[in-house]
Image (cartoon, rainbow, N blue to C red; front, side, top):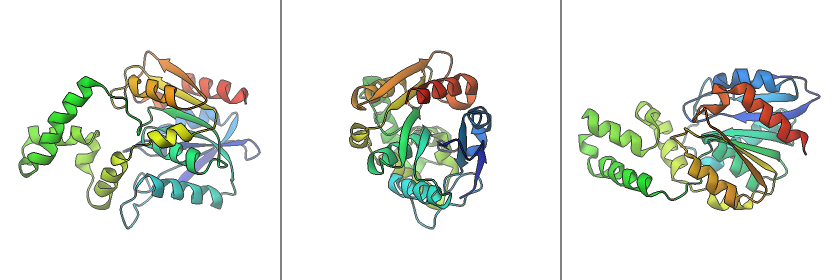
Length: 243
């Protein structure tokens, strides 16, 4: 697994897990700021950046196992986790299934726990029709766009083979059960303009994760960790200093 590290090894380890379609590269500014207080590790998850995909489709559990194995090779048995979007799915899985590995949890724009919202459900119904019933017409741009929206990420239209199947596996998994089992102190950092994982998803997490604090940034959206790295890092440092 390709990765980079910043900061002194004597500091607390902090792992940043990136979102779908990203790599560790997008988080370099955030990692640089956090490295003043932590030993920061930022991997490219399998199939992203400079890390090749697995030979078979992964699900969230497979990614969690890969991260756990990666940290073992680095001699780390416990770390603070920052999970963004897709990386949030993996972080929640690790926190609930491997609690000793996760000291504290920071989730931002995390996917996998969705609140019911009428408008979103209506849109999903239209997208489902396009994705499932109009598959044969996906060569038409309007249908292709609707299919991409159904799968929640425009990058879906760009991935092929094992990563396309991986994406389908990942988005099918509901992590509500895992969220309820998280016992670590958790910080939820969200952009109010997030359209990928809207604030009402964050509010549901706020209700079901036992020990958490929710902070909403009014000037940002889904790209919060690398759109406002200084403000984001400040919240992380203040949160960790309490525990």
